Image (cartoon, rainbow, N blue to C red; front, side, top):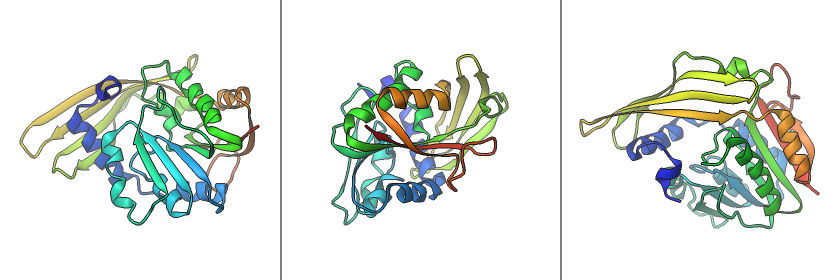
Length: 263
């Protein structure tokens, strides 16, 4: 499948996004928590939507044998420079919905909010469930799926907001300066569907100005849905938290962190 069929951003914007992610995503709380949950014993780990290696590389440095899949060439291109001296890390360009993941992994990691940020031409809810199904098929018996997902008991408070919000603003490695704005966000309680518009405006070093609006439709998976998908695929939940301090999911937490074992 060609990039253009999945990614709507123009190539210059896609590269700018990858650079902005690298500049912005510097928090390590989620990585440190993941490492504490899976323990120090070396394991074969598959990360879905590994991006630029923000989670993948620390897992490798901790001694695990890791494989990452992602469809974004610009993000994947940033991994190599971070892996000097490591022989236990592999990454591939793949459409995680349609391509094979391999098998015999001890752990599959679906983190970084990817459950909410799937890029696919498939029905969103079906794609979310498919990730759970494919995780089960890729794991050894007794293997672990680890999900880390931005979560709230009141998604309407998060998403039903038409105002403009600047998500990223800055200059990429080519000298192109721009911003990404999210606006017009709505939430349908009946379908758990989030709709919004992403607006990009880049002022390129060449003098060109690139503007693009992209309509975005996503499905917010409830905890009940995730539990159902896990159960129907043969997983038993062993640990569940609402933040990186091991607090239970509640009115005041903002994550759904789930460790479930394949039976």
